[in-house]
Image 1 (spheres, rainbow, N blue to C red):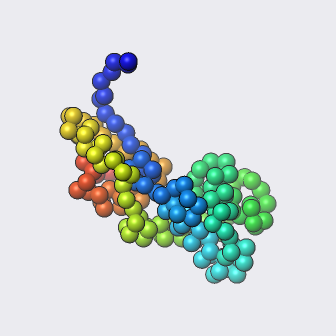
Image 2: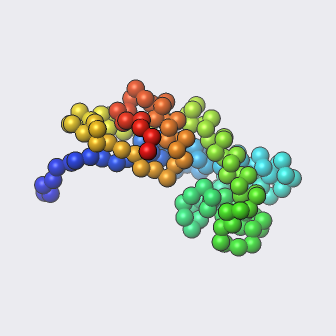
Image 3: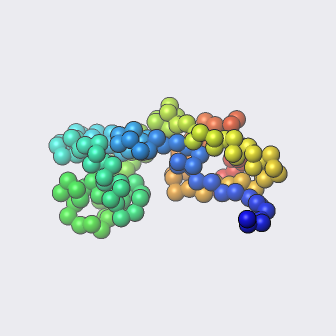
Length: 166
């Protein structure tokens, strides 16, 4: 047995505190908002291959991306559909930027309406707070700040983490 004293805890948000409903293709919160953005931009720009991009391919685009970020997943969609001809992400691509921006806007509504904690996460955080760590709990996440803030605000009375900006 390892003998140590917990001095603090740092949590991620996605799938640590916030259940994104991963696992079933098409059910994940990020998957759904990403695919909705791809379909919407495809329809608006008359790009049929994006308008009809499948649930399964959307998941594969994220899972097969060289890094698991929104930009990498969307760029992988563009590569998979033949719209982009290089594996190297072009962050200046207008289509990439448009899809990413729309995904972020759509995701806000999904978070507000459907975000739920990972079962037991709140109880675990409270247990740590009750053990004297309330001022030594933090969040470190690659999620955009707005998404972290939305989730925390929605669960403000349930999660004893300080809501300080840093």
